[in-house]
Image (cartoon, rainbow, N blue to C red; front, side):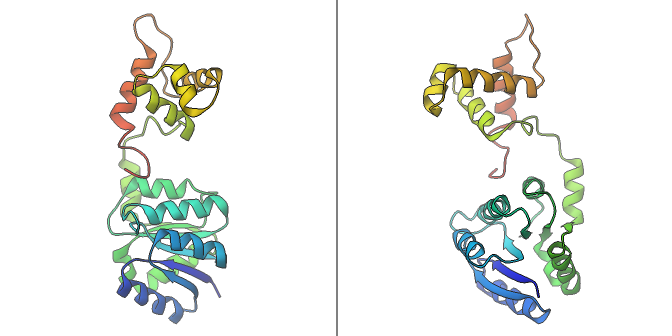
Length: 222
């Protein structure tokens, strides 16, 4: 029997999903209505599978997805299926990048009505497979490449501070690291963005321009 923690803030849908899962042999350990409750329940019960809405309290943006990715970081073997009202390729990419990229599913809420297929998808993920809604796959295949995708979280943070006009010394003080460490991060940023040394251009300015075009709108929380 697959042990499940369910997170959905709409009470009627949550209760409906609980009944559906139990009818098909899943054991629902907890059914909660917010991202913090999801984290607590999953850590307490250690389920085989988490099923969660993306937009959850308290922020009602991508809180459910963020919770799921956090749980996958803690337990890469945890199966996670997220449900979305709309196609959001960046959310799917964030989920697929979590853990080992296996035991994950990204489904549109409309698919829940197709009961047999929905249950089959849950069992696929619980068994170690990956399921992504076809509409999401098409969006992933056609989305433009994010030039900042190769940057680490720290490198993005450094680049954001560069965009504020800060010097390496100021950034080092803000992040409580050495100036040498910031210099290394800056070098990595320029390399990953493909900005080669040139007498005709200022690579630091070009990096900032790249960030301003894509950085503030990129990432899971966009």
